[in-house]
Image (tube, rainbow, N blue to C red; front, side, top):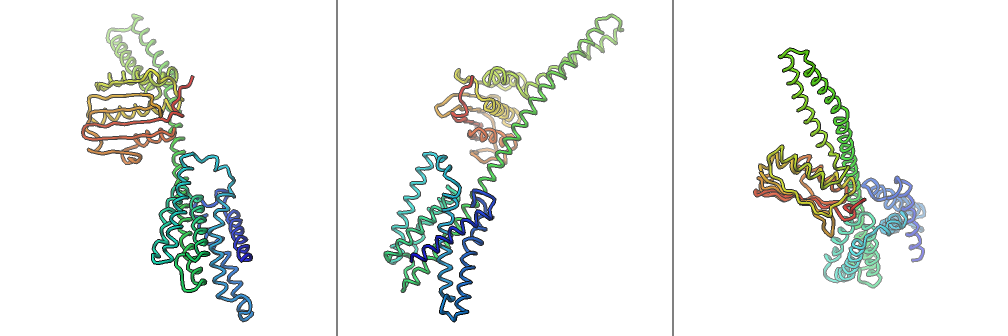
Length: 438
């Protein structure tokens, strides 16, 4: 038994080392390709190769040493050892212990609850399965699914390890699931059950981790694109204000000088004055456009004054009555937070003007214990009738997706509730990202 145990551990270490060798650095089980590499090459391939050698030795020695039957039992046992121990070695130990310090109290409590439920399900289910209810051997499966989805490869590896230990402990006391007429058949059934049970959850955890990582790459890309867009808006607004605006002012001065010189005929003077009025309108439009692209008040005095300026201009341009209520304690926020909330208001009021048909809108900016809450509501026709839009809603347009991406970048939350009586958009920034800055 000591020799078999030592062999199992040695092969598990070999499988872990092989996985580290074949994968592109830690983490080693966070993708489907890595999971299949581990299962096919390390966990299955190495024991199968050794079992083949054992079978060959038996054939050469006429079963005086080794043999096919022994090779099959040996290969299956070591496959189980590799699939139960190697993932623990590479995910819990091989990646260092820094991940332990990053676990929040809430996640730790969830992990403890999950471990307790796994132990209870195996402690109750396995003995019952060995008696008259074999289906109860599957009692840990929902919990293993929980571990794989919520905690990724590390959770799946831990769950597999716990269930394996509990199953082996039950076998030592004669309470193993799938109990057969002989101990050899019981162990064979148990090994097969655990091996078949473990592989899908390792693959599932790898797929979940890969999907989460891909999502985080998309969110990072979206955040970079939004930041680049804001910087480009700021640059264009500065160019329009400083360069184009000054050129228009110079042209206006030249036209006024010509009109006041007395050297023009009446019809020429009328044309020059008309051109001056047109340039005045163009200058005002460019000034408004530059401010809409990036209001200088946002950088100079903060979010609340910039919103008041924008709302006043929106009321004049649209004829929609907008009420803005901003708490006196709003103060200055981080630059990214101020830009994000300003763009949310800008997008919401644009949607009110273009789509809702509402003649009124309300904006509330309030500090709460959990963070800063922005609520924009109207009394329009709603978005496609009765609807409640949570974290999804990407089909509703680039504007809503952009608002959601901005809030996600700041660990915030965007919720949209819509009905035929109107639409309410709520944006919450957590307290850690919505604190006052000097």
